Length: 237
Ligand code: JAH
Image (cartoon, rainbow, N blue to C red; front, side):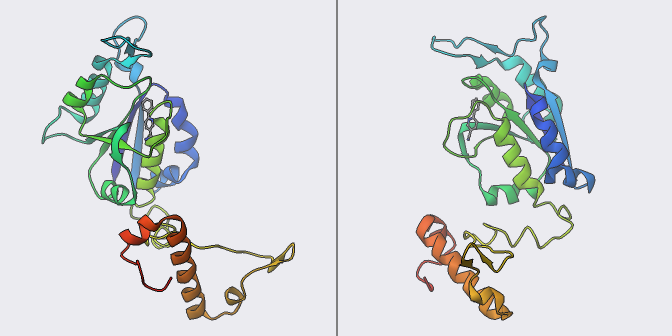
């Protein structure tokens, strides 16, 4: 059983996600437990303050260290080898999250995901309490909540027993390191556009070959970086 605890000032954002997504299914199957924790519960002042103005001036606010460090330590213990969980901060400054990172998390120990907001978190939170900074990509968001959901979902669907069908995760985009080619369902002709004949042929070897060709083709066109990573450069085309 993998346990993931999330620290956020918007716990309500996770409600439908945890109830309705594959993550909910993972929870029901006993493979995953997710706890969501309101950062404001770890404040001590009347106004439950989680942010303050940046030293040195400038726009916006910074997340103050005390509530975050206390929340993280309550969930993961003090930073060091005896820690109960690995602590990840979702931030544009982090190293990029990808499928291999998801696989590593799915086969590793418990996690605490820390969602920043505002212009960022006080550096001492990172120094004292965070193990790793993780980014899901180069775009500006309003906080780490959506990235935390991305990390949770990508990890949950790799847990043994989660889909009920251990093979279904493996056949989708990426697990082969390439993009998937086009998919079709009925009807066989829609608005004059036919489904490629080979898919109707019943010839499973021909179907597999056609799909492998289309996958290589779209990957070469759109994501040549993936083709090189998969070591497929120059095979077919
Ligand atoms: C924005 C704290 N990698 C995407 C990403 C992750 C986190 C944030 N933005 C983008 C973010 C504001 C405050 C984190």
